[in-house]
Length: 116
Image 1 (cartoon, rainbow, N blue to C red):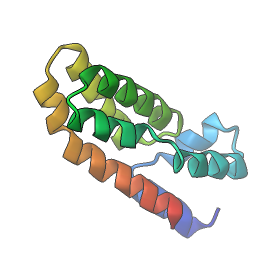
Image 2 (cartoon, rainbow, N blue to C red):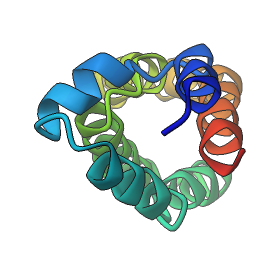
Image 3 (cartoon, helix red, strand yellow):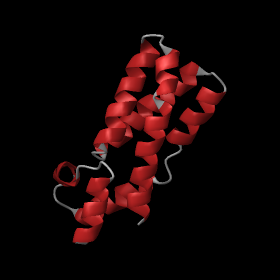
């Protein structure tokens, strides 16, 4: 992984040092899992569930996205989905929906950095 790529990942809210420690310093393995993230459908499922006001499905998708983003050290996305999961569990669906613009921004930043 080039220094430029590492900087782009960091700028997108990915704690590369933490992620690399989770992947035992193996940059190739980290890159493989970051690319797998691009195929993860939970963000799309979250958006669709919120649009349909299916908050049980939205909670499930947000919870899974929280876990995936945590495992990949996507700190901003993980923090936002953690907050959203708490809101859903507390029955505060309005707060959970209000978090979507920030979640979308963090998700898109991560995807752009991975694709770059």
